[in-house]
Image (cartoon, rainbow, N blue to C red; front, side, top):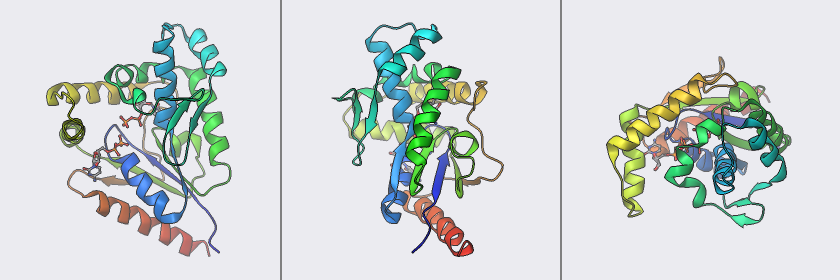
Length: 224
Ligand code: CDP
Ligand code: CDP
C-alpha cells in the first residue's frame, strides 16, 4: 500500500486551484481542504455581526467563538448554518483579504488547518499552504495564470450562473486582492522554494490535473 502524502496547492485568485485540487483528491481518494472557505466564512460572520474588521482583537475573539466545518461534498457550515453560497458573495470577496491579513487570525486558522492535515492523504489549497501550513508537504504546486485569463474565468462562471458580471470590475478586484495577499506581512502569497510552478493560462483543467497527478505518481515511486 502506498504511503499517503500531503499535497499543497497555492496561487493567486482564479488560477484553478480548487477545481484541480478536487479532481486530484478524488483521483487519489484523498480529502480536499479549501482553506479559502475558512477565511471567507470568518469574513461572512464578521460582516453579519457588524464587527469592525480593523479592530483585530474583536475579529480574533469572534473567530474563537465560531466553528467552521466543511463536509466531504464541500458544503460549508458556520455554527451549523449552511453558508456555502453566502461566502462567495462580492461583499465577502472584497473584504476577505483584509480579514486574512490579521496575524492572530492566521495563527488560529493555521492551527485548525494543520489538525485537518495531520493524517496526510490531503490536498489543501490556499495561499500559504506550501510555505507555512504544511511546509513538509511531499508535493507542492504553485498555479499561476495571466490576470486577463483569470478575470475571464470568473466572468464566465458568473454568466453561467446568470449573475450580473462586469469583466473590468472583476479584473481590478482580482488585482487588488492579489496585491493585498502578496504584500501582507504574515505568510503572504508566495511560491515556496521547492514548489513546482504551472502556468495554466492556456491549459485545460484536465491537462493541469494530469500534470499534478504525474508529479504525485513520481513522488510515490521515488519514496518506495
Ligand atoms: O477562490 P479564490 O481564489 O477567489 O479565493 P479563496 O481561495 O477562496 O481565498 C479567499 C481569500 O482568503 C484570499 O484572497 C486570501 O485573502 C485568503 N486566504 C489566505 O489568506 N490564505 C489561505 N490559505 C487561503 C485564503
Ligand atoms: O480556486 P481558484 O480560485 O484558484 O480557481 P477555481 O475556482 O478553481 O477556477 C476558476 C475557474 O477557472 C473555474 O471556473 C474553472 O473551471 C476555470 N479553469 C479553467 O478554465 N482552466 C483551468 N486550467 C483551470 C480552471
